[in-house]
Image 1 (cartoon, helix red, strand yellow):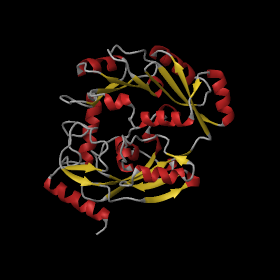
Image 2: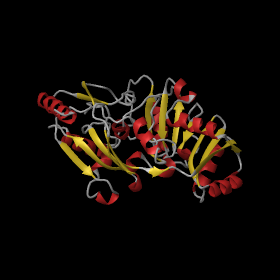
Image 3: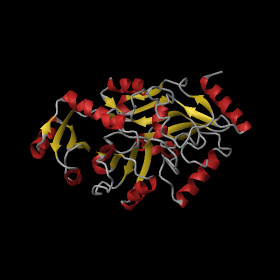
Length: 352
């Protein structure tokens, strides 16, 4: 019996018994959930690169493939995963990275994780494989289920194979640093975003704004002359952006109660008592604070955004509550794919 057949058999048996299964890869994102429930279905054994065509900028990998293995392969061809999935100090699987749908600092420039998912293979409740999407953008038709699965946290079933668009690495990169307040940083980030500048990431923390430039040497030279700022040494810049992407920066490591607020990039500083860590040019803001959840979420909603309780004792709801219409659609999808609620029960939405 193959690894995939074994996984399918275990799923079909769990479905027959209405027994919940907890889908798990490397476990680097166990914290990212409402709750964890059921017997563990370890997906790491289903591993390997199925297909990689550097000239077509597409890679197909099985769910248990370690992120480090995939990134090493791509680096050998001067390519990379532009959505920069975070590793959180571990080595996640590519299936887990896609299922979580999280993106790194370049998200403001290149787009979100789901923008790079071309196709996916899912195991359904009967242990059968369902194929969605393909290897090129033009194959997508009707409901784009493969991208819907990105960020679903496995509640519709285990992703066992993914097809991902990759990009060539930029020819050159530089990071500029500026001393300024968060208010000034938000203003200047938004001003620069509307100009033809090779900016691939912007962040602000503790009075310093960081701007990453990516492109040709000439484009970076022109941009630096125009923007000014302190040029960081390449190893310093790489360490900084790596600490942001993987949340190994002291701000994230030391925060016992951490909130993730997604708001319009043009939103001015929010009325919260602590200084934020700002990413994505102002669209993503992290707060280490102990304010009541209702107050934090009210502030996010007033700004046109959402608030997720990223870390800390979770006595309430971790993810931002869905409005009734969206919740109804989620419930319909869940009932269609997983009528007995065996997959990651309660992980994304408490009551299913």
